[in-house]
Image 1 (cartoon, one colour):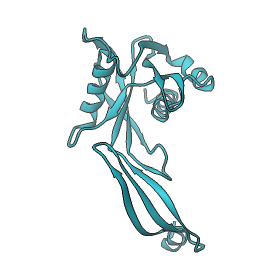
Image 2 (cartoon, helix red, strand yellow; image 1 turned 60 degrees about the horizontal axis):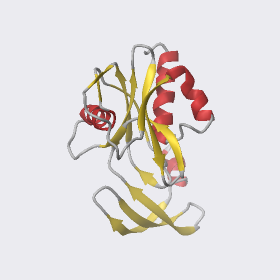
Image 3 (cartoon, helix red, strand yellow; image 1 turned 90 degrees about the vertical axis):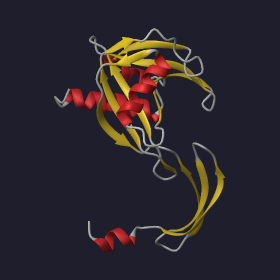
Length: 187
């Protein structure tokens, strides 16, 4: 793509003011102008990087958490994951999150893909990892994270997405990336 085309569609940022700045999020409003001259304010949410993990056992079942999401007002299946601490290795974070949230420790960790959950509003790099095999740590799953832990057959995951049981961007991206890797022989 040429520089002229790229610049022709680029928005102009006239300024950005912070509305709220917390430990894990910065909410701001940007004063932006479209290439056709229309000017408006756009909310921007800046979040730390996050890791999401697809842990597969030897029977190709995915380790998932059944949890209530108050914003949606519903119960859903999700992959374990969370924010990276400053200067934390992403693979270490991914393994730590699985262990803290589920009581299982992945044996291996391989990065599959990264994605942005909502590029028009949110600035957050999400790293999806594939963990092969897992060992129980003896620790109970975090009661603040999940009501129960389950091993969902990978073959059923697509149907669960279609039924609205798996809806989170990280969980959907992780499962789809795993299915693509499997279909492409990169498994």
